[in-house]
Length: 117
Image 1 (tube, helix red, strand yellow):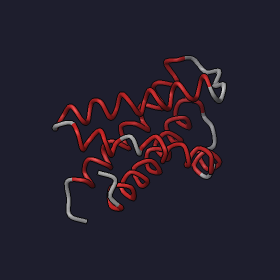
Image 2 (cartoon, helix red, strand yellow; image 1 turned 90 degrees about the horizontal axis):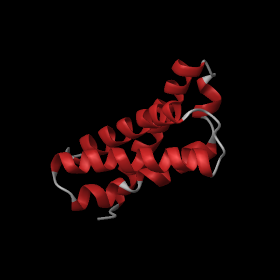
Image 3 (cartoon, one colour; image 1 turned 135 degrees about the vertical axis):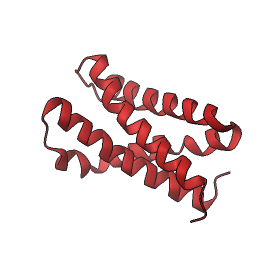
Image 4 (spheres, rainbow, N blue to C red; image 1 turned 180 degrees about the vertical axis):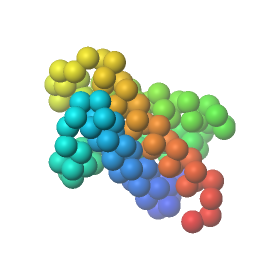
């Protein structure tokens, strides 16, 4: 399950998801995306959360893995943003920008997993 390939793929998915999240914040709030993209803490936690995709995709079939992966990543990112890092934005904003992270991370992981790299 946790092969080197899957770990690297989940890390790449987390990084690209974090970049998508940064651009979503830029589009919705007008923030500069570069500091968000280059934040080591944001990248670290994006990668850690994306590691949840490895067992999800290993144990669930097809579309269920996509749906559960999206919901788990969005929940992890959103709940930690509010209850750990104290984000003061409305829930609709937090769920939307973290939905961008989750969508891209799941998409990258699923597509990368289905191809011979």
